[in-house]
Length: 229
Image (tube, rainbow, N blue to C red; front, side, top):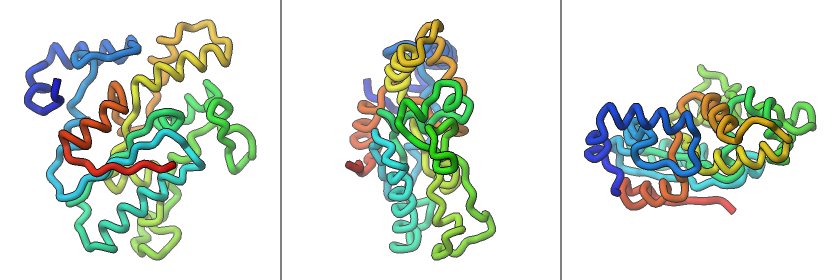
């Protein structure tokens, strides 16, 4: 089924209600009636000249975030393109999917140990989402300043510049099962899924399957594709 605004609206209120119910259950495979496409469609289909999707599975010390920042600056300053005319999406799955969760989840489920990611402040496995919070000076608009919003490559900073971060439901399901086994948790894996999905970073958008979403972004919404090895 082609995901378009028209056939989404055909789902109506009942579809939206089922979407929330499906997310709460945390089913391994979501169907079109079990997730809310409104935010996704709004984010990816807004009118603009240039669209770019970053397909990211590995964290690699957050290098991809700096690449996204460079894309934004290249469009805006290198080519003189107004920010409203480009749209950049970060499609996170694999271990990178974990960056969509807040500090509470990083601490509760020991996500730093799971991802083999150290906190630079403690040199111990991260118990917080170290790539989320911005420390840029909001009044610094000099693109050559390291403290500028234009050199900010945190998730929060990139979101403020219009980057959309997508969360993979399938990856969350798979990771929940691994976390249950790794930590010896008694709770069903679906409870862990529900917990994680209830603690996403602000404005992160859940999609059913990122590998399918990337194809839809490319073919339906005409996003150019980039990934990092």
